[in-house]
Length: 199
Image (cartoon, rainbow, N blue to C red; front, side, top):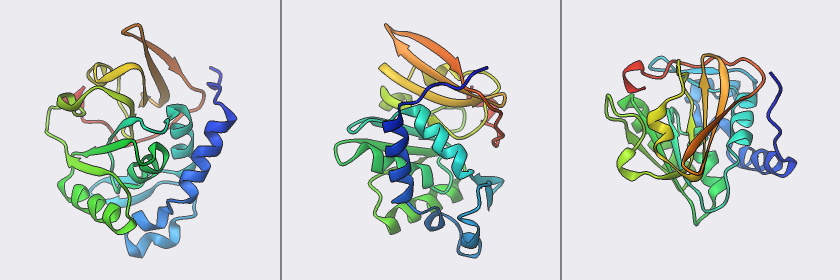
């Protein structure tokens, strides 16, 4: 399996967005000394703040454009939600969804403190994503699925893209002509599981 090619300009925009959105701001105060470490950090409620290099790769694959409508599934502490809001700019929209009520509150507080232009909503058990607000230009999933979540594919706009770890493999889905085209990226990844009932 080979790596999916990413435009160098996209990687540059990802690095800039991550640099302007410090990870430490989205970690509990007692864990902020771990912000520069390239590994996941447990933030409570059986959830993690993802490894920065993994976040960078996912965002590069997602290839967010200014003005996009983006859905961030499994928003956790709100860090990726905030990075995405920087990438879409003032004309774009970013909505995070999170199943854990305490993390919804925590993420919202972090977004408010940092001034990020994004929202986090509590996910409805059994409902994956935000079908009532679809379509989205980009969907990022920060939890591991066992199969490609077709209910999220259905929430993509024409020309839209989904990035989701599936059974340890980062998977990219592009919608062209109303048909999902799936590709697997090189490497292996570990995430907390996506709720199976939501697939």
